[in-house]
Amino acid sequence: MMKNKETEAREKIIERLNRIEGQIRGIKKMIEEDRGCFDILKQVSAAHGALRSLQKVMLEHHIHDCLEEALENRDRKSGLLKDLARQLSDL
Image: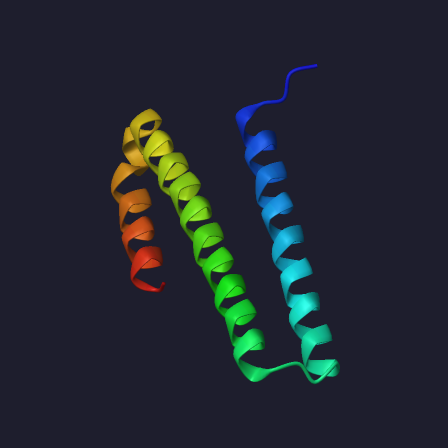
């Protein structure tokens, strides 16, 4: 059975979230083990980068979906684009 693009995208996002969750658990364990501050900060930076990367991927999907809907539904185009602009300014 072929998966649609939305299902594939959701699965990839969940995979990323699982990796990020593992990174966060690893950071917590490092703190509990009283590991060095610099080593912990490197892992925090890596987790932060993974979150930023996830944000980009999700934003790309959202923009694509909004623009696709705006092209299909011209009556709602202005409202959809205004909503998208507002959402982007909130990031």
